[in-house]
Length: 256
Image: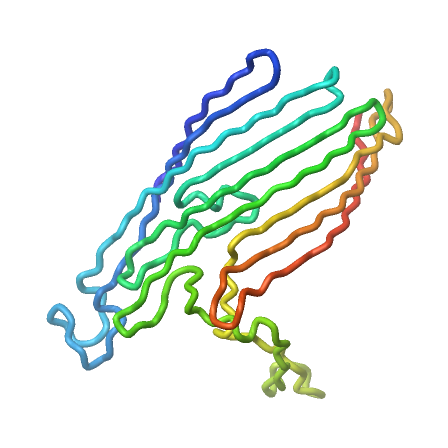
């Protein structure tokens, strides 16, 4: 509800570029004490659900990080490192993991997170090769309601029983599809597969090859391969994870 504030200090001592930074992020939640009651229950003098007594809850997250980039071998090789850690700063990562969750009483609970990235690049007049590896992590944050029900993020009491099962499709309702058929609706795992993310790790390799680089512009080709692993927090029934292999290619022409 307010802009994030970022402060950074950079150093260039003659052998690389270095940064140290910090950030502050504010969060706001609206709590309705009388919002989740029956129509016959009285709360703050009003019968039934209402906005009476509603109030704001705020929390302040913060994180610190560092970046470094160093060139070697007459600038033919570049090394890079990045790190960020803190509470309520996970969305600054490329995977946009959650910053916060909500406790049983409606109060915000910020989640601890860490992220890191390492890069290695090799350059020549015709060819640029790169190798990157990194990961992002977010911690648990959960509580129990007065009835013993877990709420929040990544509770070990959340159900993961159905994460390893393929849901069956259901028959569509009349009018949902063309008249000649009722069709099928994809199934859903429902509440039996929470699968809250613990970390995401990726390694990628690729290169850029300059087919032509001259007075008429630049033409280059860039294939890339990425391997991604998503791990989840353990719940009732296990901790599912996913693996993805991806291949990309780019063909670019730069105007002179």
